[in-house]
Length: 562
Image (tube, rainbow, N blue to C red):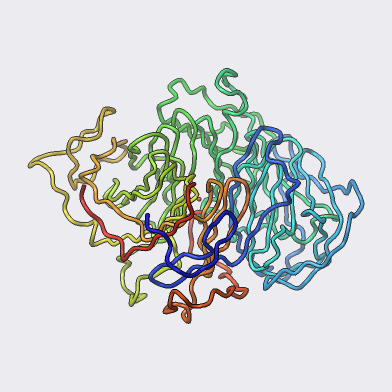
């Protein structure tokens, strides 16, 4: 790749502190991370840091500080925080534009296997915290951290310790009505829900309630030679859009469970044994009062990631077997599926209009899937190692576009274990051209080699397709390729004001979008830090993912046949 243009200082490890797009320069604004004292090796071995951006709304008038919780049972418990120690310091903490400065001190631990405490210096929240704000939630080792996105303070403002199992994945629902808006999936296969506002309001001294959803099915029919408890670990959690209180959890054993947070888990339920691990099997709990309410056995091996379409109609999953699958969630029906070119798929994400899907994985490629065509319509080459996260940019719009016009170009990003952030432009007029194929040819729906023919016919519902020949599908080239971290990357998020990247070790970088005044800056212009900005309180609806330092810039990316 071409080396970076002039301008811009070198950061840690010789990394550039900005990269360029046609809109201007994206500058490294500041970083977030955890205390150096946090050790990645804890409980269940090394963990990979993941990131969630949470848009916390203004608390409705008349709403109490404590969210309501369902009745407690052996399967779902509501616990209160207990202060086990005294404060260990006091300092002033600025919350940027999320709120006023607050005193922070103290440390606490919650019984029952989950605890709440502060950052390196400890923390005590503001007792009558009512404000809105934008927060970054990320996990490292046995701890879940919460940072204020709009503060330049590098340290988290809150941390939650899990004393028995590492947190692995999390999701936030800004529309939750009962206060419990944060989901946390852990290595043991269990799930916790809690109120983000309550954690911020009282992180140290007052009780912090949570719900513990115990997956009683997780230890059934597990072969210890296949990993034992590790085979049932949580891999992804997601709230179902437009379905209050419903969420799903995917696991490393190929199962996905559906939960209703309003139901108790203190019931006796069982699901039938899965006899063929490679076949789809959807089962419902015998009791209508318990959790989980349903189990979807989707594939053999791990489900690596899940993502809901913005309206909650469709659920996409990617797995160890290399297949992307798209389901009609309400109908519990497989709509279509397709295979990677090589190895497992690791990530997936929807466009804001629900028309396109991205996936990435061990073949180092990014695939673009069309819901209308029910197949892959483009693939992108640019990463030098596994692609670990993909996402559309819902805030970007093509130059000179009219908001009333139908979207004809999309911007999306990808990050990988090669430490690079890649940005791509997807122009519909470049991928909508008819693909050449022999007269009368049709796709081959077999488990063998890639399809010999790949025409424009929409495949039948419920068919898993092999990968098409690469020469038959338009190829995308990245608009930008920039090495942003020293360590392999694990997550990517877009906000209205910035692009966020996180590496496996838990270091987050916030890249400020170019302002209008910076768009036409010359390469030798001075590199001044971008001022503190405020992200939108609510982004577009979405489901809620080394070598020498280099950065490359190309003109508008184009599609071509190979």
